[in-house]
Length: 232
Image 1 (cartoon, rainbow, N blue to C red):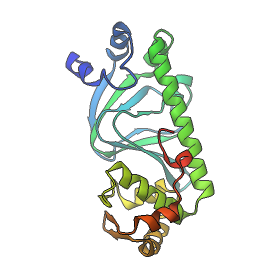
Image 2: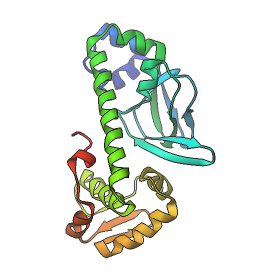
Image 3: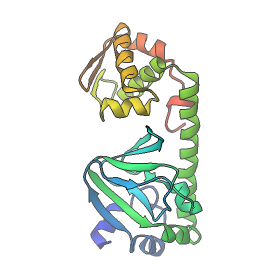
Image 4: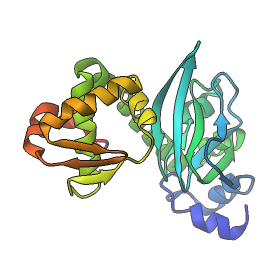
């Protein structure tokens, strides 16, 4: 990496507290690359060559089984993937592709493991990220197991609106097909769910969502910080 590129990424959470010489060692063999949409970056079952960190854009993490496919997560700037495979040097359990064009930092997996053993701040940052990912998996399992498709969609709308200032209107950040998979349902089920949500004050026009009855929608979703809060 060029020095100006290192300066661009050195303040990301994974690297911010590292010793300078260890950060240099970690990043000197890394690549900061721009990727267009739809590019598949990693494939489940393959060995982990790099730790990927999102600098700009969105990444869809997904998995396939036979002729079926599901979205596991949508990641934005600052997020890494797939850390557990890199730390353990085990095959990827998920695939990842570019959802919206951006830049990805790619750090050789062997370097990550070597610096992990040398720099306590970096090891702590990796451990914290792994813990957050684990807690996210538990929350998503609870979301899928304990809520109906209608409740999951309502909860997602409320949370997404809150992240954008509680304005009561926003644009879907990705296609409805991706949203349906992210929420654990088929696209046609999501379409029927949007129709049902009209009774709760939700208007869907293309990718535009408007909320006219927040209290009714909130009552339906019954937000729970132990499921819906990403930082709890």
